[in-house]
Image 1 (cartoon, rainbow, N blue to C red):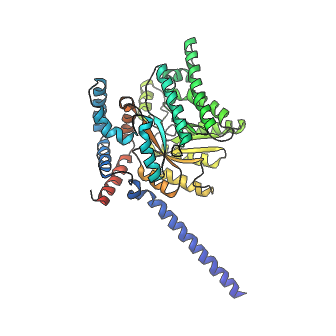
Image 2 (image 1 turned 180 degrees about the horizontal axis):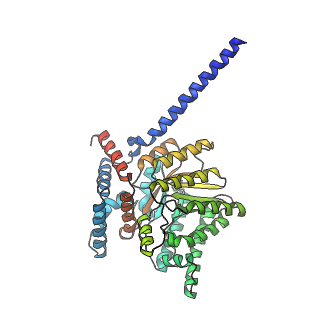
Image 3 (image 1 turned 90 degrees about the vertical axis):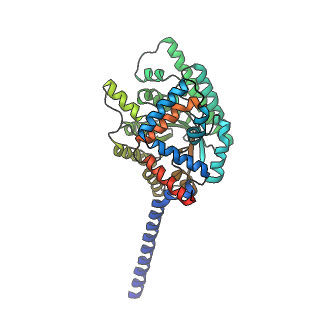
Length: 417
């Protein structure tokens, strides 16, 4: 009996030691996951790597970004011939091309060589004419068609203001009465939303709808929730976006989940930190109302991670985690393991912007996770507001540009450039 007991204790000790060893090994692997620059930048040629290093060195300087933004806006308004220069530098780094077709070689390269999917993002902003909204509708329908045909493009995406005027969303969100012309205009906006959502549903293509400034978002949220209720009966097809630098978004998320449970539809959400922080704070200060933005980055990070945890805890929810943050990415990896989900579960996606955070995208894809890059496209002049926001966002997020530079410098050293 004593010998058997001793053997059992020995076996338990050995199994415990093996478990601890595996736990330590897995932890170390995760910690080093995003440090492999050979994998991260394997799609970049030496010249592309050097261009990326040069661009992020410029972006690191706030004065340079401010000066560059002012100069760029001036030369574009003056119609000076600088589009070629812009295209060969910042545009080609952060955008896939001028048209959707231009992006296809980029998309194919990322998918075949890096196992990274793409989300074609028509990034034209600030249009106010009905013809522009109809053109955007046509492009999104074409992208849905691409997505149905190409495994490398699993999602379609659009911005609410791509389909209607900003001030119209704002007026509806503020519960102001629309005049007869505005009612007809809003009916056309709603029809455009339904057209793309119906097409996405018929073709089984998940559709991401981006978030914008807080003072127009309520109208978009209400409309998107109606579309979820209609098209998300079997699974998440329509995805809204929540910007977690807003301190009210967890309340919105809990309410959305409660309504979805009551009405019997699936929730699809893209979770991001946000892209309009400076504008939000400035407007709140100018108009004298409390800022909707979290008090600091730590509060935003906590808010973001809480949203990820909430989505993973509840059924009938799908997540597209749009983040350049390593800790939030690792949290989602841990939750996938904790809930014993497949790493290729189509309800769980990691997403980053093209031209940024390749160390997250490529290394996650190498491990077999679902990863997609947002690939913006559009005419150079029309995409400039997007590019300027990317530059401003990088300078305002402490450590992000520095991290990119450290990784680029490491890879340059490895390649002996």
